[in-house]
Every structure is written in structure tokens, then in C-alpha cells.
Image 1 (cartoon, rainbow, N blue to C red):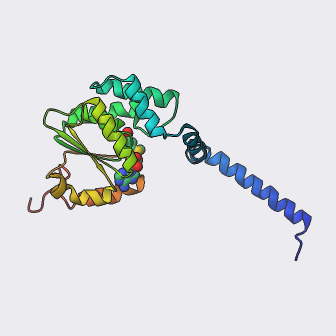
Image 2 (tube, helix red, strand yellow; image 1 turned 90 degrees about the horizontal axis):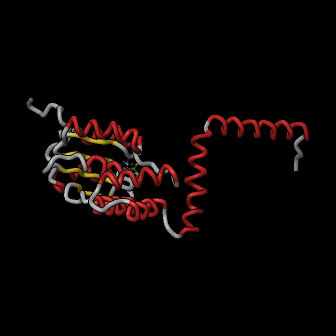
Length: 215
Ligand SMILES: C[S@@+](CC[C@H](N)C(=O)[O-])C[C@H]1O[C@@H](n2cnc3c(N)ncnc32)[C@H](O)[C@@H]1O
């Protein structure tokens, strides 16, 4: 077998170390999230015998008031600020979302990406009587948590939680979910689906303001 000259080996190792350091420096935030989500989180879940999403729901059930959506939001925010970070829209961006819902006053609102139901609770609590929210969540475990979150907040009558990939559900909106027109869409799922799903919604002429054929 050929042996690499020691100097070449040392230079290669040094280059590798420098590359790793550079990557760590450039992508420190991303790497930290990966480390947390792919290593620490699964270990913690294994140790606790549950998932982060179940822990968030449990915290809500123990600390919020049933039928009071504001207390549900506060309990989620507190838990995720003090205990475990989670991908909810959060209070800061949530206030922007509140302002849009208040301004648009949608009758039929669609959310793509429910996760634990934080934004669903946030938006549904502001809906006018008779208005409804449909929220689509890819992960059935997250969809189940969302449903329980909405039940606890007392918002279950205004919201339909649908488990499945947006790209499969959107084409069924008209026939299966009785949606003729959407007044507002909140895209909060994986970013690579934003454009294809917006295009999927277009031919269905569901988005308000879009010219109907013949207009
Ligand atoms: C950022 S989280 C949503 C947070 C949530 N809107 C909130 O603020 O509480 C993104 C969610 O989108 C879901 N998701 C990703 N791709 C999806 C798809 N194609 N269809 C439906 N849900 C999807 C993920 O499972 C994840 O729960």
C-alpha cells in the first residue's frame, strides 16, 4: 500500500480542521439548531419518554385556563422561552399576524403548517362569528396536538385541522372541505412549498383579489 508523505498528511489534516472551523463559524446558528434537534432533542425525548410537542401541550393543560385562548398563547410562549425553543410563530411576529387578521377580517382562512397550533389559536381567537379557519399539518402527531390545543382553548368549532401534505389537501379544498373562496392564507410550512402551493391555490381561484376567468 502507498504511504502518504507525512508533510502532505499534516497539511491535509490542517486543511480539514480549518474547513470545519470555517463551516462552524459561518453556520453556527444552523449547526446549533441541527445539534439541538437531531442529537440533544431525541436523547431528551428518550430520557423523558415523550416529545417536546407533548411537553408543550402538557404545560398548557397545567398552566392555562380552559376556554381562554390568550392564556393558552401565554403558556406556550412562556414554556418555549424558558424551557425549550419551538418553531411557533411566537408573540413578536404573532402581533403582526393579529394585525393582519384584524384588518382583513377573513371569513375563510387557510393556514399551511400548524405544528402545535399556536398560530391557529392566535388567528382563530380573532375570527368573527361564523368565520372559519382550516389548518393543514403534514405530521399527524403535530396535527393531533393542534386539535387538543384548539379543544382546550375552546376554539374547536371555528377550526378544522387536516392532517396531510398541503400539496395533496389543497386540490381537495373545494370538494371535500367546502371551500369556495379563501380570504386569507398564512403560509408557515416548509419554505420550499411556498411557491408550488401558492401556484396550486391559484388555478382553484381561491385567493381573494385574483381575477376569475371571464372577469
Ligand atoms: C414553522 S412550523 C408551523 C408553526 C405554526 N404555524 C405556529 O406558528 O404555531 C412548520 C410546520 O409545517 C409543517 N409542514 C411542513 N411541510 C408541510 C406540508 N407540505 N404540508 C403541511 N404541513 C407541512 C411541519 O410539519 C411543521 O409542523
